[in-house]
Amino acid sequence: MKAIVKALLATAVATLTLAAQAHADSALDTIVKSKKLRCGIMLDSPPAGFRDQNNEPDGYDVTYCKDMAKALGAEPVIVETPSPDRIPALVSNRIDVLIASTTPTPARALTVAFTQPYTNNITTVITRKDTGISQYSDLKSKKLGGVVGTTPEQLFKDELAKGWQASGATYTGYSSDAESYLALQQGKVDAILVSAGVFHALSQSGQFPEFVQAGVAPLADFGSIAVHRDDQQFLNWARVFVFQQEASGRRTEVYKKYYGDGPLPPLTSNGINF
Image (cartoon, rainbow, N blue to C red; front, side, top):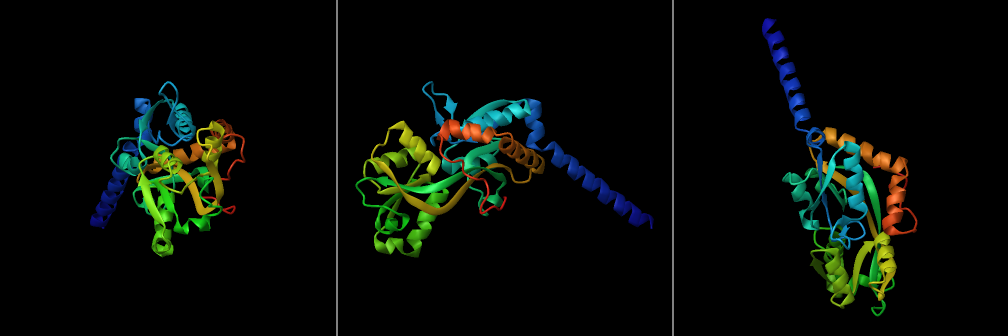
């Protein structure tokens, strides 16, 4: 009997020790103590992330980082994180949180933990006026472009494997959104996929007058905030933060500032919450 009691006590102590260790290791505690929040953000993806005329970080995601830091009583530290380096930057602890329009896929969820979506990129086909493309199905024989490591890239690769390659379609990956815009403008590719909000912002800027929208792509590209996979405490807090941004109307305010007066995309899929 004594042996059983000792074993139970040992198990309880071990459990408490592990729980205490998990609590101590939470980025939430580190951020509050250090008063610094390191946010990984793509600064080559306007209007979500870019540098302003003074070379300072700006955009939808940058504002979300600043709002999160304010809620934590911390100073926001923007860490420029290119698309292919988003997950590696979080896993290697170069950042505390990833706020970079990252789609929460099952494959990525094996490595990091996601909040519910904080943004919804309704994906559209963008082409030039001279390509003759009017809808998504027209892309099956065209030169396609995208950004390495993104969900639109994966969609195009899947389509190529399923038959588009046999129809003459090709795909070229670029390191940033800016490079993909330039490739489309210069005729290196015939079409790219971007969110409706991004296209609206590009249209407003006047930088690419030859770009036109050619229908919607079959891709629901929600973006979630990501934290370390095993950091349940920071994940819980981040989920509350995303909810509060929505409930308070702050998301609407930030969206309209950077994406214009277009319709606010829902953060649910067919009415189903994340």
